[in-house]
Image 1 (cartoon, one colour):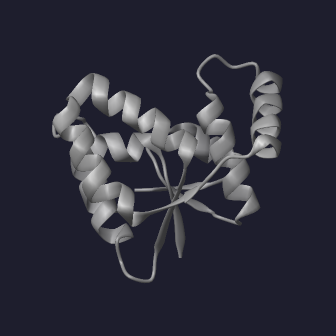
Image 2 (cartoon, rainbow, N blue to C red):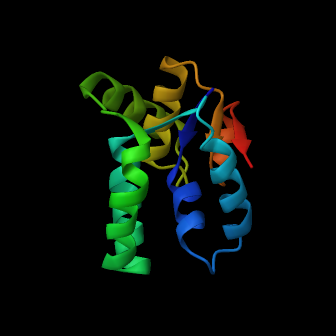
Image 3 (tube, rainbow, N blue to C red):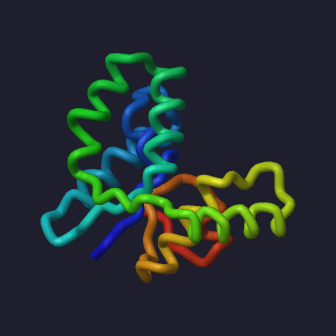
Length: 132
């Protein structure tokens, strides 16, 4: 199975003080099964890098880069996906929805992904299942 990896899942896994840390650890170990591919986008990497660096520091960022990023299949956002995501974001007219979210949904639909390792309720609103 292919599983989309979102910033909220990554961050909860790395921050031991996060309220979802335990759930994220369990979900991550389940997602790491050999039959699964862990998919993300360069936009999620950018968002994750910024969040990890600002909240957890450079050592945590180095650990993320060396230990987790190599396990991910990165889908690079091109102009067409970016344009569709911007249109969706502006049409939704919701302050809490981000461009990274909208690109994630576009990629998940294009790749027929149904599950996301995420704590972001926007994934459920868009019809995807969240792990955990």
